[in-house]
Image (cartoon, rainbow, N blue to C red; front, side, top):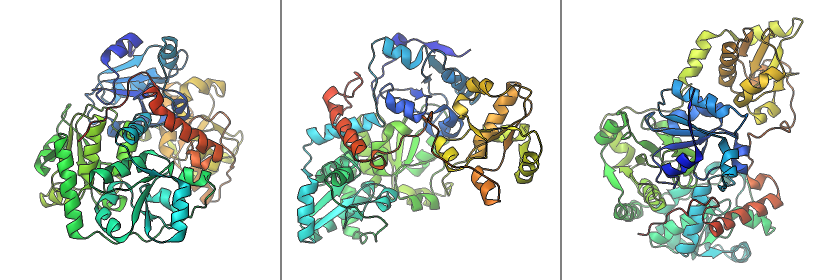
Length: 536
């Protein structure tokens, strides 16, 4: 049986983020997590455990605490067993889960990325970042072309919708462009979806010597003011001059060094990356996606600078672990590292010279996303018969039909599922399969990601459902091959998807912005104390 830890002992470990030298995983679905969680926890829905663990734990020697709803849930205990199977030796289950946490008088944090967003609000107030209202910007922007609006969101978000006339400079891509932009325009204004990323961008510009206000409440504030947005990609700004890029890189390096960031060589990174134990670092690549896909350090996470600061709790599950940041030998890694140190991460480094030095040293380079099918999926696929396209056609023509279960996401189920399939998310499989099937029944499991079906089939077979089989074909591929599928809205019981507020209407945007602004009113909405803000 997994080891249990009480709330008293958990608090005694020290929950203050980001100084924690262990991982705290919330095994519930994203919607449950957003409704209320322990501040600083990383959302790791049980169905993603096998797929995300290797990127969330730089080494399996780090201690892990997991939790779920509490009495009668069971997901945390099952996850602890799986973690042990995956080589994590020090795993504890929070006794009583979230229910016991609340009963003990502890506060829940609501929403997503609360540590980073709280930090952003502190930056706004303590660094005195300037803002411009949508009304002020709209009036100026209509009268002259002297204002440059730089959108620091991801390129995908920008293409979906952006302010008219804006250009896309995601995250710290902005930095090297600042000298040229300020020479060519009377004013440079920074924008994101809401608040955090534009606040961080404006504070970055300020630290580099440029006065660039942030659009108050970002694109959501713009839309709430009744102004139109545009869609589609636009031509990127001209590349910065080598002189500008070098000057910004030197300044960024100085900022980071002053806060204790240091440079490591490619040889040192190769040694650390190939080691085991707590010295093995997170490797964070902050370059553009196409550069990452073309070649990156093995095991590196692709996390562009602005995202790295906004979503630290989603990726750096052990904040006390060392972090190495990589770019092309420019300003981006130094700026991301500087911000991580300002947030309080204790051990942050930059690969000296970036990817060019890694390549020049002859070390291994990986291409693509760097994601492999988890070893447990390969093992399950070898041990259980899979149904291919023709197998499925033959089986669905016979009577009686097998029981069909879709164990993927609710969104995938809504997009396409086999007729008469029941949505049974894999995180709840063991607890709920008995409501629908008996051990002697023939069962076929499907999912938009067939790996989920394969793992589910292996689980059911271990439980005694000997006739459980996984379909190796996704419903989308089944439909492309001429098979019948059904579509429809996500099930009413779905808790696995949290849509961004700007996709949910004006009131959702208002509610979100009010929530974000209130974060600093109660320190961090959790009683654990505000995130640190270290000054240069």
